[in-house]
Length: 87
Image: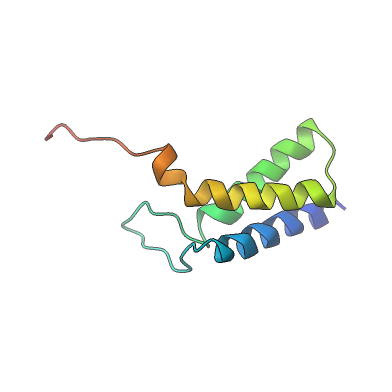
């Protein structure tokens, strides 16, 4: 049953990420988020943490997926990066 909640969270994160405009391909030389790299991993991690702390259901899995896609979209604004010493 828990595997079903993980799948629901990843699918909802992918679908909502596509709706809000995350790009599908990712660049290995860039830290920009895409639909494939940080979004499903963030959804799986948040589902695991939420499942450990609380009980999972379908509604919470969908909400976790939506939050994961929004977090992936705004990750560059939340964590802007490190400036090198040349500035």
